[in-house]
Image (tube, rainbow, N blue to C red; front, side, top):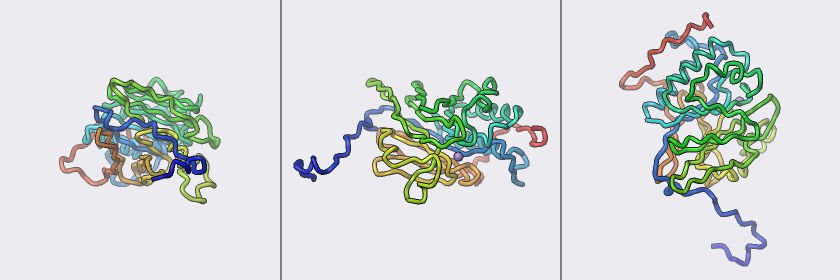
Length: 282
Ligand SMILES: [Mn+2]
């Protein structure tokens, strides 16, 4: 218990403005991935059926989401390895996005910044209607009213350093049906002196200020919870490095996130039957 007399000398943390999970009558499940690096070109021997490994990874993450009845997929930066990825590969990627059969929110990262010569602009006409691409460096709020969630993030829009959680999300408040608050950010979480040498720093106080129910991070390729107490923030883990994705559940009882691997065969052997173009064709 703090003594009220200490209030002048002890900084008081502002009262949380985050709506209580209990005020949300509906649950939302999200499949969270990042750093897919489509176009990087590396392949593995066991991926003969899907020669372009990162597209196969994307399809597996989407299938994982469907297995978990996900309402939404988020891809938090470095979806494409670079902005020189050729059109046939973008088309194949967009077909995999369409086949996700759920809304997909994509945040451009430092490898695929949103700019005039990016794949997101050059090949915008290939992206399916269920794909939502965040395009603004100062932040963009995407409201998915039909599933009861709002997603905010700041896109990388050039190759220079920036703070990916610099601004405050302009959260919408619908009292009759509150929307869950989800932030996407692609950068380096600062937990020690070491990270202060890195670009795209994300600081604990930045995460607190977001007032989000879940912060989905990308840039580091292993699954990891981060952030100060009171903040639910995770690196999803890249598909190839972590072997899976993070399944996030927003329920009136609270928010949870769990990494689930897809590199072990599932019991029912379910697999996407789409034949992706051979790498030599692309
Ligand atoms: Mn990155």
